[in-house]
Image (cartoon, rainbow, N blue to C red; front, side):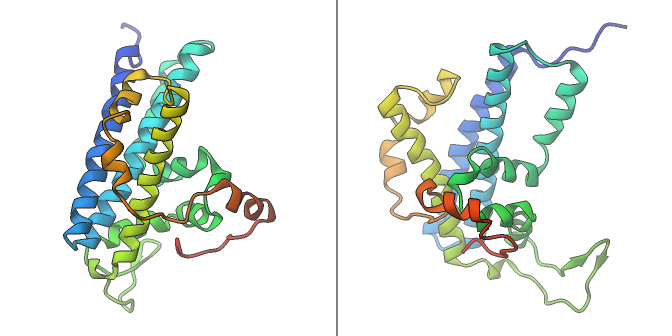
Length: 225
């Protein structure tokens, strides 16, 4: 029986590039829906954009670590790692885990406690809350209408700020990603699109949040506000 092979270098790079391309598509669609007043759908698509960006960056990091160190891990390890790319909460957490001290501790805890995933589901479905394996029949009926303009604006702003930061880094240093095709998706053509979004999330700032992380502020928070 032939040995099972892992992903090729070509597929690793293609997976990262296509994930980033999809991120930009989802981000653009979320802004369009926001401007149309469809805030629950805008929120959901923006969280999906966040997840796709996280996946793109995760794949790029795995690829770079492998080609610059001791080569790609064995098939079983790679399979375990690839399975993480199908977990929404893990992709959401990886988004903030990359630069933990840059993000609001409240946001980190919100994602860590899977509240962002829960809110994403609320933006799509009508239903009742669950407690463990059971549905809480005494709970309030949840509808997508509970997702407001401010919710969508905040998460879209967070994703947009990530891209603006990347654009600025490429402009100053000529590169950001370790895969050049990823830089080319953002710079220089996306300037007008990215800088047209007028809002800030208030959820990312190393100068603002570093001391809070050190002090342990924000634990137990139940919102991204």
